[in-house]
Amino acid sequence: MPREKGRKVVASNKKARHDYAILDTYEAGMALTGTEVKSLRAGRASLVDAFAQERDGELFLHAMHIPEYTQGTWTNHEPRRTRKLLLNRGEIDRLLGKTREGGLTIVPLQVYFSDGWAKVEIALAKGKKSYDKRQDLAKRDADREIARASGRRGKGMDD
Image (cartoon, rainbow, N blue to C red):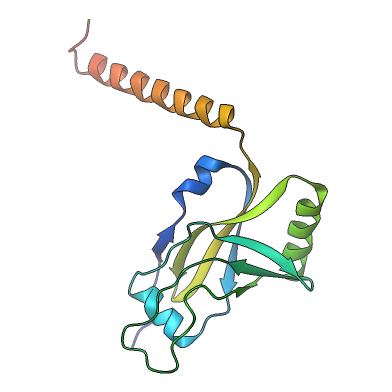
């Protein structure tokens, strides 16, 4: 059977981009069990409230929900278990150094399959204040209105 190519997104955390200012992103592997991979291949996962945390010099992903595999037996996994993230030592040290610096956290943005391997895109992020969120929404609305107006002008509808 040929290996699958490309990138197939399973789950994305849209709220993370709203709640956090993304400073840097990393691609990490995950240590998963067989039923977790099968459940992910079925397109079932949730990153709501998920976060990464350091323990004994390693990074672990907490609160990510992968539902039990429906055809699984007694070997099925725990849906919200803590999963180890697989990164290079240099990347782990860089991430941990920046989070210890202050005010930064590690949040998952996407879970996907890259050439058949389950990966998670994690980001070094800084929490936004409520006024920052309002400014982002206002800027997005203004940009949308500008694009709409220029589209009308390009079609000769608005003179």
